Image (cartoon, rainbow, N blue to C red; front, side, top):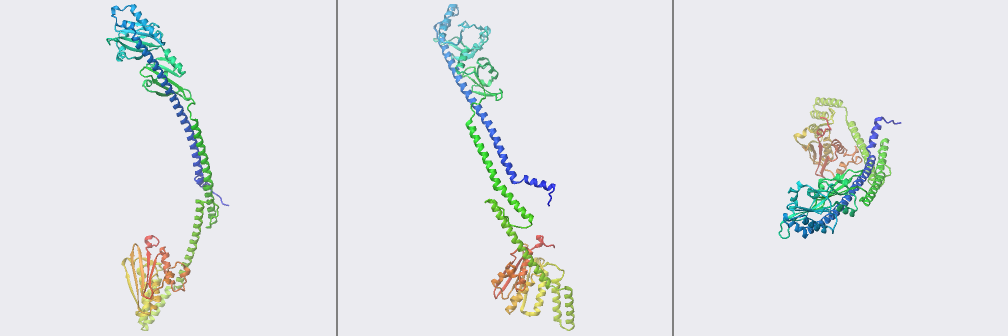
Length: 595
């Protein structure tokens, strides 16, 4: 039974937490949470904005209509003041010399003014000042007059600047007030004589706050306050005076949010055109203006999105994460069994099934490579065994050769003695030190000794030539790669041709690679034989009894040495020549061979 340590459990839990399934689940839940939060925030923002915009539109409409009504009524009173200025009795009062003015003339002018006022209502009183400050008042209501302010020219300046046009002010421009201090709206005019066009006096017409109450009554609004720009209350809801701000007198509608209850309140202010009158409307935010249709559509879209996310999550789980886990479990079973087997898990058609098939193909390919490597290893072992079988004990061989050499020398057979010395040198280079890789110069010496022995047998039929560059002499190569090639050139090339032949060995280094070639003028090789020698299949060329075994074995050794297949090139013209060229890499620079 296999026990799992605490650390292994921790690692497994960490891997599970980092798995694709867990991350996808977290992503889907995160997206759902984000959508829900976004929906809630959107509802709050949209409803808040629409409620505010609804109140803004409502306030702007109410303020503009009320402002228009107030200005229209004031225009009517302005026209009334113009009619009063043209009254005959008032004109006579204004034209009279100061000494000629008596109480009768004043009362007569007052009655003329009152006759005109009888056709309307809402005028609190009318005050007319001559240039010498002799005045008349309708006295419908009692007023107190500020004698010091009357003689001050400052209160007249704004009226004089209008050149006879009406100007709206508050509380008789400060020169007269009611005992109860109730505010009035004043229409002032400078009076000019129609004949002489000289200024003869000033007319002040005070409009009662009842007029503005009546206007408000027609609108049926209890959320409006009418006040002066100086903060004095005129009509409406007096509680809203506390919300007054100087920005409301700027000439355009201004909106401000104020704290009131849970949802707050919108206070809007607007100054009536060309007047010191400000209208304030305060409205609590209600449910009016909420775009329920838009909210329902937004809710529907959110629900659809949540359904899509749920469907995507289920789809990913069924078609990605579960198949991935199934694929992982199958691989784990292969790992536990210690065998490279194909996966038989049933996966949905798609990329994961393609991955499974690719994995199975990879397993098949790996198994084929393993079989091929095993076969090559067996071939190498057979070749090494053959070499071992062909080797003899060096000391016994050296001693035997030296004994035969001394016997030949005693018998006067100098040629035999030289031949034995050459053979001894050959085997010393071939068998001594036990090195598997040697410099090319030693390999050339082995070939030279070998050819010297062959010349003793075949005489002048063999001529050898060497073209070895200096940098190639110290190039490290596998031992005994030239001798099989030279032997092949003699026995399967020159000797069969029956005439003198040349064996030429060339070597040069280019791009850190040794180019080594053996050329002979023998009978050549057919294309079939070349293909057979170059074949990578041991069954085709690996039989030791085959004449081409030495050449094929040398090629295989160099392929294994360089870990490449494209190491040899064979050129031949039957009956003319054969050239075998090897390209050998520098394994010392590659780090594979110890120097």
